[in-house]
Length: 227
Length: 215
Image (tube, rainbow over all chains, first blue to last red; front, side, top):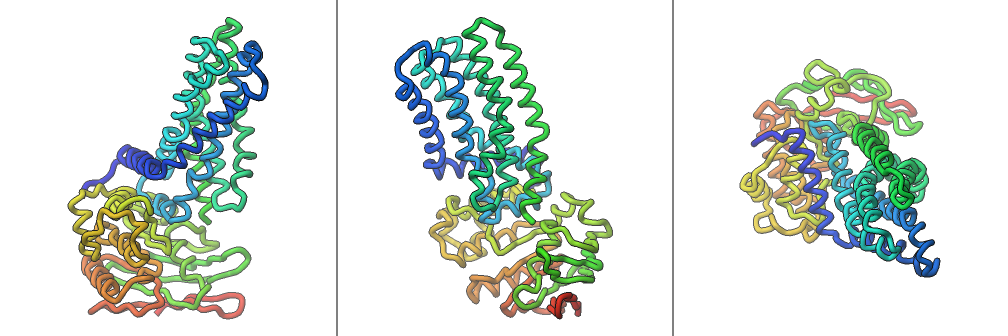
């Protein structure tokens, strides 16, 4: 019998959550379909004015990404909480923060990454330029992991509460505002000819901050929720 | 060695027990008794660190468990009311993952051998959602076979098990005690471990404050 290292445990959690997601594909698809639906409703509702659509595009795509990542957050810990796996995770001989980071990473791969890949296709509906699409993808790549990580804190705090889903959104959405501002700002900077580097580096800085603090905060919140 | 001194625990405003002290030495087994709601599960969950005691201290080999944290968790195994297995995964996957979470990298052969010993031959690769309640419990209990933890904390390990499985668990516990392991458990079914003195801890509810009595 070999001992698991800290990194091995992180990979184990990611692999486990991805395997579970693959066995429950409906959950993954609903998030993605929700994203596609919300984004596609705007051109239909607003009308086919290219100038207006082009201007709205980054905001609509980012808000839709934000909302659809909220959809799957409730499931981040609740299934493990209900069947007792979360208890066992707390008794793991490695730090709980590491396991939490693994769960967040898997959550992003399942619900964030598909949105990033889908976004350029939807951007075409809004007549976005190739350059703007590129920046949108980079912004989403930096931003969606932050959404998963901040969301993790909310998911841990609302664990086991009735009507936790709504409360979760109320808690998490305000915290995601900076990500939204810099994410859309970067794409708008392209169309106005300004530098995108500042927005993207701020997003990167937020990502680093989130990586450093959110797993630990979430682990503490989980311990409180278990009582 | 597990030492509990002057432990007090409450749920909400309700005091479950106060002044609870006992020590569990290697090779010893202790049954926590008491009626429903007397705080058996709360006591075991406090030992796991899920609940914070109001007063008192829990020490493992002389150091407080709140300081040891992961070092203590590496040496203990907790099995609660919940099986901690995933319906979508097979018994084999479940066992390998739960062993991994407790820090042991388990090979496929070892895992299959453990499941077979638990009487799940031929069902190792079925998703656990098609198994019966008792069989799922057996998947969860297979962790006992692959763990190298010294302290077993078992909350109602015999629930949903048939006679043959109960005998098997008794055998596993006897083996564990023979290896100088420690067991603390609750059950409402009779459990006999051959050749071992069974210590009991009775939680009684006397009025508002209750005390634990260790025999």
